[in-house]
Image (cartoon, rainbow, N blue to C red; front, side):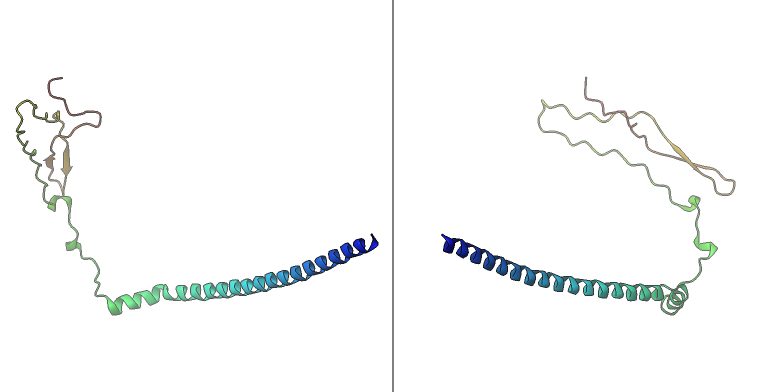
Length: 150
């Protein structure tokens, strides 16, 4: 009976020894990975610092101004280039779309939307002369097209 107990304790000590050995190597591998990741993080932070320095150099207003003058043919805006609302062409009123005839005589033709006479006028007044533009009638937001005969 004593031999069986001794065998149990020796097996338990061996298993614990192997477990501690395996755990030690696993912790060592994790520490190495942590060290490698910390070095990588530090390298990335240094790269970000260098990139921010380059970005601030590239975006210096004096440098950009000299590049614009050297490579672009930009001129200051002249007063003659600025227009007024009166010089814009008036958009023509849209004509209603033609209704296609249906080949079946039993089906009624779709009813056109009910348009109330709501016109808006826009006044563009360049230097004293008023000009009124009439717009096409529009449906109000709460109105729906009328159904035929209901």
